Amino acid sequence: MPTRFKNWQAPKIAEGKLTKWHWLVQHKKNLKLGKNTDIGAFTYINAKYGVVIEDEAQIGSHCSIYSVSTIDNKEGKVALKKNCKIGSHSVIMPGVTIGENSVIGAFSFVNCDMPANVIACGVPARIIKKLK
Image (cartoon, rainbow, N blue to C red):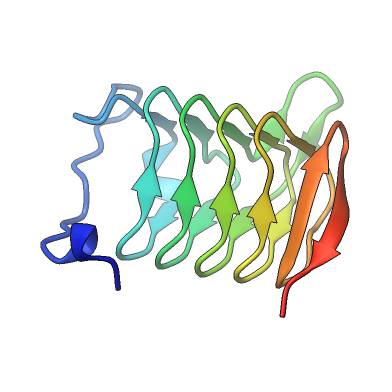
């Protein structure tokens, strides 16, 4: 475990207000946040239909995670599995699962599930490499 997580504590999350690290959650009662997570500044999480962020997941700054979309009327739980990494400015759409240890490149638009142990990027995100 990285030393930066040695004294990790669960963040205090107030409904619709920025945390001390400047990220925001709507529908916080539907957010499950694992241990040793790292969420970048100005990230927005809409957990209306559930968002699960497992242990050691990292989310870059300026990301958007949606469990509901009013544009195409999709809804569904989002799951970010253990040790996955989401690059800054990425968007995760409703119903998407990002597999364990997977990496999503910066500025990606993820509208379908990504399996464990892959690198994916793009608009829309596509797998570019399998990790060993």
